[in-house]
Length: 232
Image 1 (cartoon, rainbow, N blue to C red):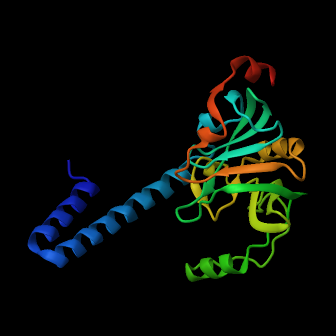
Image 2: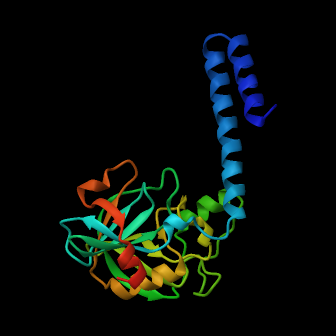
Image 3: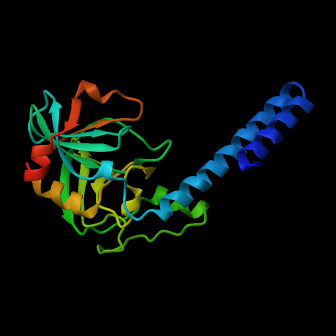
């Protein structure tokens, strides 16, 4: 069967064999770019077809091994999970959406302030970046069901400085488990409301960035079926 990928492979192979040296290398770059473009289109199509994230990203009580103080938040960017530590051996695990390629980050910060149904004020650089891509963002948008920040927002600070990153809800629940944001961590609204009720201003937040090993902070996470059943 002729597929889009076989067509692209044929184009790439033909270019690479017909053009020696630097031209062949350029043909390979073009082929790779075409492949990524089609893959991105397919990813976007699949994302919009699903209304909710996969079951594995539903909120769970889990067993863990950690030395972090109860009340600490640990974000594992690669696995797309946020953990609220309850004890050295237990945590609540939430599915999250994280930063897209080039927007991931790591470090230790804290919750500097909290807002219910927050106003969204996209930074000037974000508005400029999106405008260049043909998307016009508002200077400010009041909180509500259509607001990208969802039902709650927890603002992440480094010392007294706002990092401009947030843990927040979303009006796009299908995006949980994906790399789509500009560095913020998005949660389903029901989950961010739950976390908001548990994490106060001053809460320590450890962000384990892309490619980093979260086992340094939290190890052997696994679902605790009894805690899940009885809401532990």
